[in-house]
Amino acid sequence: MEIIIGISGASGSAYGIRILEILSKTDIITHLVMTKAARQIIEIETDYSVDYVHGLATYVHDENDFTTAIASGSHRTHGMIVAPCSMKTLGEIAGGMSDNLLGRAADVCLKEKRRLVLMARETPLNQIHLENMLRLDRAGAVILPACPGFYSKPQKIDDIINSIAGRGLDLLGVENDVYKRWDEDGTR
Image (cartoon, rainbow, N blue to C red; front, top):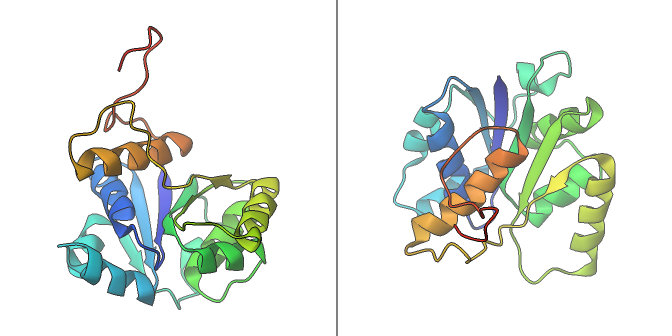
């Protein structure tokens, strides 16, 4: 299985990093595409280096390289998650824009009917954001706002990050046990 992980310049790069950490411990092949803004945000928001994040991925692709395999529908992947997904990136994908490899890889997933999960990270949302989300939902994308639940009584930030990262992996069909799930009897 091959999965593309996009990290855009929205706040919340820890979500994409955690997804990469989880997947790096599996046999899943990962393709990482980070925007320039994402690299800056990682340095600002986290204690991780960009080199550390690159080291988690099987393949790292330059955001300006349209000659890489994931830019083509003929290269089969299971799907893609953009975590976090800025409103700029979401708007570009909704508009069919492929100004960089992240947008092109997302467009490939949509046109090839592959799973595309967009972890939207913005608040509050305006009408344009909402219309873009609706447009993408209608095109087959899954919109996963980075809005954690608190029924599991998280004790630390990592618990919150894991809950959203785990949900994103669930939506891609990747088995994981990184967060507490709701049980049939109403317990966690």
